[in-house]
Length: 226
Ligand code: SAH
Image 1 (cartoon, rainbow, N blue to C red):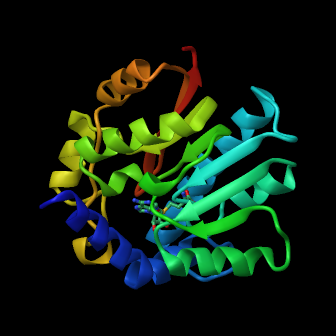
Image 2: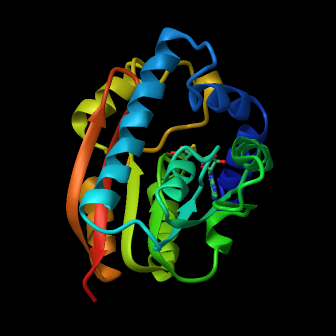
């Protein structure tokens, strides 16, 4: 499949069935299934971990943050409330519409429809959570390369790590609930992403694995060193 085909499928998914599924998961009031509840809690732990790093291993107030593939604003909205100036974008119009609804008349974050390869500008911190799982490693690496150019001091990403254990779970189908409910999930090797970040002038200062029954993400906090 060529690159743009992958992207179009992902975009289509997050404007239709994917939007309905994830809008519910990324809310705390909507009723969801047990599996979805597990994913909701796992994702919330990822968001909380990132907020924690930004708060205690740095400064939030007054910093500029770009949230690439922001979804409904699960990270961006609390971050803006903590005093960061947030630019958040997503390839899905539906997601951005929902995110805007959630902030009402507030003007921070600024939400925009855009794929992450088209984001321009320069931000203290660039964050990209749970997006890379939708792309093959080659494309994920190209995305990192683009995001790194936008990040002045720090790049925080999450992805599903590829190792024998998760490979096995994926094969026996117990990790991802029903292929029809989601897009293909791509796992990435930790070291491959680390090496790319390194060559882009970033060092992974800390990482955290968030794992539950149906959700797993490895989060990297990469700091610019060059
Ligand atoms: N980062 C958010 C949302 C994760 S869901 C959070 O953690 O809460 C993945 C999101 O990535 C979806 O909203 C999807 O529309 C978006 N996405 C997928 N491919 C993208 C791309 N190429 N550019 C921008 N956004 C993308």
